[in-house]
Amino acid sequence: MVQQSEIPYVIGNKSFTAVAINTAAKAGEWIKSKLGEFNSLNRKSSHRDLVTEIDKGAEAMIRNLLHTYFPEHSFLGEESVGQESESFEKAIRGAMEAEYMWIVDPIDGTTNFVHGFPFYSVSIALAHKGEVIVGVVYDPSRDEIFVAEKGKGAYVGGQKMRVSAESKLTESLIATGFPVSRQEAYDVNMKGIGALASRVRNIRTTGSAALHMAYVAAGRLSGFWEVGLNPWDLAAGVLLVTESGGRVTDMNGEPYSLKLRNVLASNGAIHDEFQRVLEDEGAVL
Ligand code: 2AM
Ligand code: CA
Image 1: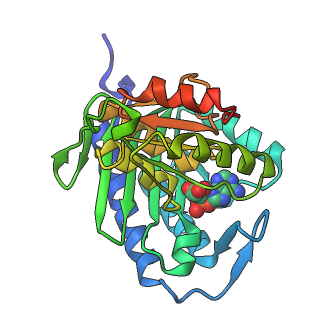
Image 2: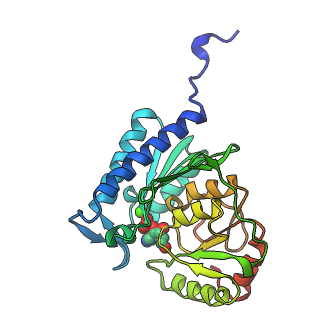
Image 3: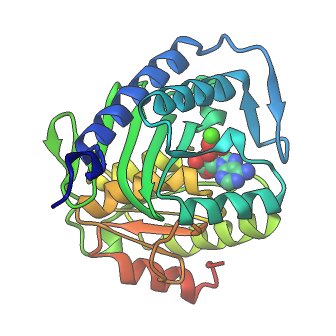
């Protein structure tokens, strides 16, 4: 017979999600209160790659809050990973192997935050052995919180989300983002825009990959693609899209994993056509 003391203490998904929601909301409110008030504006890899002390402060706040509830969990945050490719690779390997790993972007859309353009978000995901099981994206400007739990659906404002119904590119509103640093990525992006512009209803590019993913999940966008992203930009958004009935692959149609950098997300119905157009025009990496 199993002794009571031998049964491991298991915290259900529900409280993972509750903590993720609370933490994203707290950090988001703080970030919003600092709009226009930050002092140090630093550049990371290029003049386009911005970071403020608010990014760093928000990440510390999120890490501390998560750690208070789940001290044994691992943490992968944009501002804690070094710029060198080895530390990046090591962090990803760690994320794939960890029992529980929180994957956090404290501000997704820092350029927007810096310019006061109200389209940035807090992205918090929880991966269990490399599989995302909770995803939360909070948009402080609209006070909207997008929440997904593996196998349980995705919600915004208390409503279950469902991807949009367009079945052709000609009816689709598509978003993309401009990679900050790599020229190679920039060229492929311009090719993609050239290929899609005349085939879709219209293209949007608003500067937060996590919110673009949330909007695909909510049916506000039919699809989204972007090259050169990082796991913290995508992890929460991927679960939002898949739990809303959409599809996420890399630009070559390969399934999502935490290593994926070049994303293609859609309502599912347009996915193959979307991917084919990009591939036919040589706009995939
Ligand atoms: P960020 O604001 O967290 O940096 C805009 O196209 C998207 O690209 C945003 O989600 C932005 O996230 C992300 N991004 C910005 N700089 C990046 C970089 N150096 N590498 C990968 N993604 C980046
Ligand atoms: Ca960020």
